[in-house]
Image (cartoon, helix red, strand yellow):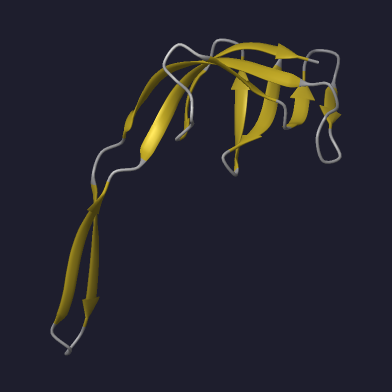
Length: 103
Protein backbone atom coordinates (compact mmCIF):
# COMPACT_ATOMS: atom_id res chain seq x y z
CA UNK A 1 0.00 0.00 0.00
CA UNK A 2 1.24 3.49 -0.79
CA UNK A 3 -0.01 7.02 -0.20
CA UNK A 4 0.75 10.43 -1.62
CA UNK A 5 0.31 13.06 1.08
CA UNK A 6 0.90 16.76 1.49
CA UNK A 7 3.11 18.23 4.21
CA UNK A 8 4.79 21.61 4.38
CA UNK A 9 3.46 22.65 0.97
CA UNK A 10 5.09 19.67 -0.78
CA UNK A 11 3.85 16.23 -1.82
CA UNK A 12 5.51 12.98 -0.79
CA UNK A 13 4.96 9.36 -1.83
CA UNK A 14 5.34 6.86 1.01
CA UNK A 15 4.91 3.19 1.87
CA UNK A 16 4.95 1.68 5.35
CA UNK A 17 8.50 1.55 6.69
CA UNK A 18 9.84 4.29 4.41
CA UNK A 19 12.14 6.99 5.75
CA UNK A 20 11.56 10.51 4.38
CA UNK A 21 13.15 13.92 4.81
CA UNK A 22 10.48 16.64 5.19
CA UNK A 23 10.59 20.36 5.77
CA UNK A 24 11.11 21.51 9.36
CA UNK A 25 8.28 20.47 11.71
CA UNK A 26 7.27 21.63 15.16
CA UNK A 27 7.63 18.18 16.70
CA UNK A 28 10.08 16.57 19.07
CA UNK A 29 12.27 13.55 18.36
CA UNK A 30 10.30 10.35 18.99
CA UNK A 31 6.91 12.06 18.66
CA UNK A 32 4.24 10.55 16.42
CA UNK A 33 2.73 12.84 13.80
CA UNK A 34 -0.31 12.27 11.59
CA UNK A 35 -0.82 13.62 8.09
CA UNK A 36 -4.48 13.79 7.09
CA UNK A 37 -4.03 15.58 3.75
CA UNK A 38 -3.82 12.36 1.71
CA UNK A 39 -4.18 12.95 -2.03
CA UNK A 40 -3.91 9.38 -3.38
CA UNK A 41 -4.13 5.90 -1.84
CA UNK A 42 -3.07 2.82 -3.75
CA UNK A 43 -3.00 -0.92 -3.07
CA UNK A 44 -3.56 -4.24 -4.84
CA UNK A 45 -7.31 -3.56 -5.15
CA UNK A 46 -6.84 -0.26 -6.94
CA UNK A 47 -6.17 3.42 -6.56
CA UNK A 48 -8.30 5.98 -4.74
CA UNK A 49 -7.87 9.60 -5.79
CA UNK A 50 -9.21 12.35 -3.56
CA UNK A 51 -10.96 15.53 -4.60
CA UNK A 52 -8.81 17.19 -3.25
CA UNK A 53 -8.18 14.80 -0.32
CA UNK A 54 -9.25 11.23 0.45
CA UNK A 55 -11.76 11.32 3.32
CA UNK A 56 -10.80 9.35 6.41
CA UNK A 57 -7.32 8.53 5.14
CA UNK A 58 -4.34 9.18 7.40
CA UNK A 59 -0.58 8.60 7.34
CA UNK A 60 1.09 8.12 10.73
CA UNK A 61 4.82 8.65 11.19
CA UNK A 62 7.45 8.96 13.91
CA UNK A 63 10.05 11.76 13.99
CA UNK A 64 13.47 10.09 13.97
CA UNK A 65 15.73 13.14 13.71
CA UNK A 66 15.67 16.92 13.40
CA UNK A 67 18.60 18.63 11.76
CA UNK A 68 20.03 20.84 9.05
CA UNK A 69 21.18 19.79 5.60
CA UNK A 70 24.58 20.57 4.09
CA UNK A 71 25.48 24.20 3.57
CA UNK A 72 24.92 25.73 0.15
CA UNK A 73 26.50 28.95 -1.06
CA UNK A 74 24.26 31.68 -2.43
CA UNK A 75 26.37 34.04 -4.57
CA UNK A 76 24.96 37.19 -6.14
CA UNK A 77 26.94 39.06 -8.77
CA UNK A 78 26.28 42.04 -11.01
CA UNK A 79 28.69 42.59 -13.86
CA UNK A 80 30.53 45.92 -14.11
CA UNK A 81 28.94 47.24 -10.88
CA UNK A 82 31.47 45.89 -8.33
CA UNK A 83 28.63 44.02 -6.58
CA UNK A 84 29.35 40.62 -5.06
CA UNK A 85 27.35 39.13 -2.20
CA UNK A 86 28.13 35.71 -0.74
CA UNK A 87 25.80 34.03 1.73
CA UNK A 88 25.42 30.53 3.17
CA UNK A 89 22.21 28.63 3.90
CA UNK A 90 21.41 25.38 5.73
CA UNK A 91 17.85 24.12 5.24
CA UNK A 92 16.28 22.58 8.36
CA UNK A 93 14.63 19.17 7.95
CA UNK A 94 12.80 16.45 9.84
CA UNK A 95 13.63 12.80 9.19
CA UNK A 96 10.50 10.68 9.67
CA UNK A 97 9.69 6.97 9.48
CA UNK A 98 6.25 5.97 8.14
CA UNK A 99 4.48 3.71 10.64
CA UNK A 100 1.03 3.14 9.10
CA UNK A 101 -1.30 4.15 6.31
CA UNK A 102 -5.01 4.02 7.17
CA UNK A 103 -7.82 4.08 4.59
